[in-house]
Image (cartoon, rainbow over all chains, first blue to last red; front, top):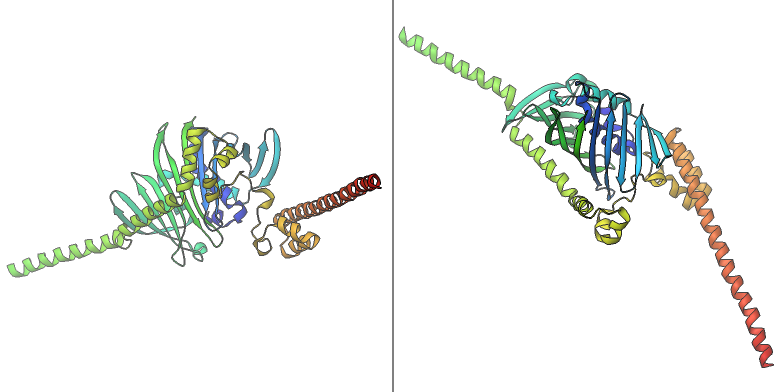
Length: 222
Length: 178
């Protein structure tokens, strides 16, 4: 599961983005819905490289075809289609690039396993053990100890849940540094499904210090 | 006898209290909830602070419905301050995870020509990344030679036109004066 966090940096941003988008669609598996569609705005800043990105467009995920489509309209117009771990980028009808997304299969598995209602980010299924529970103002904080295979780089994971909805996850490394944080905010119920309309993320590595926020609007689930 | 029973009851209460405290400590005490809550809210503020200027750009885009080039022309300070990417794809300028010295293959080829291309090829492990970076180095190499050739031609063009002008204008003047 955590391999998605340690993939080649060249793909990290993209996969992180796809992953985050997939979280919003994850509930589709457990329900009878087949399609997730939304307007999105993604803002990202890498403070170590002094680079920023603002991306706006529409995203569509189809369970039937297992296809993720991004219609990007800012900063430039492009269409991305992800199917069977292959990303094709289009400008108009012309394919401008085609690449295999390493780690995307992990992502799909993760996506299937993950359900926000489980409140544990799929950690339990991957051998993480609940080591501590605390509560404040209705939010339950759970600390998870990793299985032996993760212990070389993950010291513990903290999850926060309120009203049976996952609010956030923090991964802490063996040097007590929080290297990955994801927060799920502004839940809205669309067709009885809880969708986080704002997802905040911080990722820290040797050459990356990425701050990211994704907003969803006009979410439609069919 | 009464004393014994009351003492036992008190002991029982103390024991239950102790047991409850122990269980609640194990269940809820080890992980300080205030600390966890602070950690989550601090992260939230940290991300918001870092994205403040991009939020501002997003607000402008929503209000004015403009393209990237229009944004860059109208709000150059904001675009420069954030170093906002003009495209969603950084393409050939994107470096690979293990590209030599962290410099994208394109610039190796552009600056060092064939030598740069060889450096990229030799220093990277075999795989799709190397293939991509070597390709970028080759593009850099070709562009560098193209730029050099263009510069060379322009330079010769300027020198040649200056010579022609000199040889056509001056003799007439000289001839006129003679």
